[in-house]
Image (cartoon, rainbow, N blue to C red; front, side, top):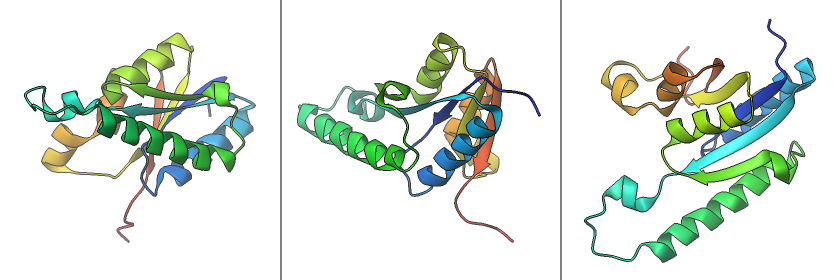
Length: 147
């Protein structure tokens, strides 16, 4: 096993985020590595197109506050310092790679639902992170167990 010095865990706000975060923490502890967490919020104008004639500011602010609350809840269980927690806006794959490169991360940990076929090709954030990463990526299986 490689000795990792800096691990970035990219989490969504699903029920499985806790298990992904705890797996990343265990790897960080085993390697005496720094652990950084990121959650990426896609701007509503990107997710739904800029043709919507509504002011989405209040809704975006509510989504951001819910993300902050959930991140606080998650990180309190592992005592991750505020300076190592990032909530950013943009495309998840792009932002995870940006933070990984800027922070000289040598392992990215993400959750993966283990999708197959077209869902894997077109719908998986973890797949996008894997294919463009300049460091190791660990996909932690989450969701339904199939055995």
